[in-house]
Length: 534
Image 1 (cartoon, rainbow, N blue to C red):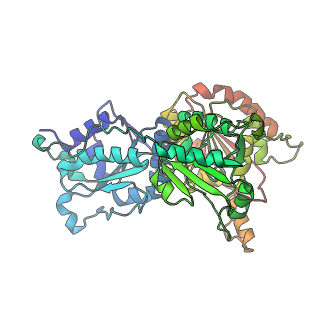
Image 2 (tube, rainbow, N blue to C red; image 1 turned 180 degrees about the vertical axis):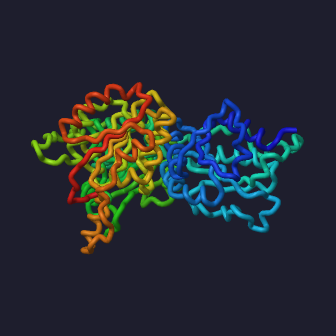
Image 3 (tube, rainbow, N blue to C red; image 1 turned 135 degrees about the vertical axis):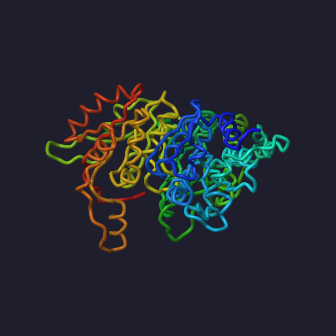
């Protein structure tokens, strides 16, 4: 007979999950000890980094990554990162260890109340009734993660791994699931009619459109439609080439400015996101009264919480390509003007650097296929203006908004796809939430460039405190040395002294990014920005 552990490891192989992202605990030793050579254990020093790396890996490969967490402590530490994975549409199979089944009723040391601990963020949670059911549950978790694009959790008591499987019972999960997609049918006619009848249509794209087929379909559709394209506010990934002549910019995250951008348009086609994502609440209507909104997404959750007149559950690439084929072309003269990155003059001698100086220096040097990972909340709008995404997966950020995603995710992105250079632009406050990821980046040869903008404070929080007219009670942390922490974690690091030094280092390092196997952190001092307009 085969043991539960052996059968589960076979499921991992069959599903292509050859890496186990983990920080080990005693309830997982029976599963992890003597791991076969064809399966790789990837260690991170905190569960947030474990899930962050797995999330980056899943985004890079497009396939579920396997995560192993340690009972209550491990799952609890990872909840924020699991929430980010869910909203970032990153498929994860998460196995959480539990105390021995034979005395769970006595609530022994390390027993966990795990069901519901991660709240609504997992797409599926299961503790198999029998040890026999564990391999099938892991296989089903893979399907659930693929179908719903998020973390699927299986809770496994530690004694289950040595139990034997009765082969006569089989596995209660299909081996293969074929997803034929959607045949858009009448929905194509309805969307086409809306756009053909529109006097001034607009297109809004989101993270769900970030792949080659959808970019191609949207470019074809937009060029025939002659409409401007806006990226959703706080989008985790780019849904359209941001150097295209029809790209108009990023939607603002406040209602009044959103209405201003959409004013004059009569139809908005929203693709790969909900309608419309916001940040600070503002009174008043979300959109202009005369605007008809149609949403196209493969994610039913996005459709159900959208303010829309028409919602279509469909593969965005398939539907947009079909609409592009049927729509009536408009005169080429109706195309919008291209959005060009602005010219940024370097700081004068003795003048402190600002974030825009760093972004401009990167913009002049980064290759077209770079994967740019962003976690610099106070200066994100300027980053968008100066560093447009030019290829699918050219921009990755934390959809959930919680800090600590960017640094380990960049390592995971590079590990998952070493053919593309990866650059993470992080605030120093953000970097400290995931700084442990540098150890894993160095240990596993993730040759990403980490550019940390250091102002020694939580600038967004300071500006929000200014808005409410209160004094911020939190201190600055200018005494924290990010490059010192990096060095202590085994990651090479340099402290940039001024703008000429930054330019010289980038000229040296950027040409090496494609083949680089050693990470590098640049600690770049920048002036604190006094405004914040998301």
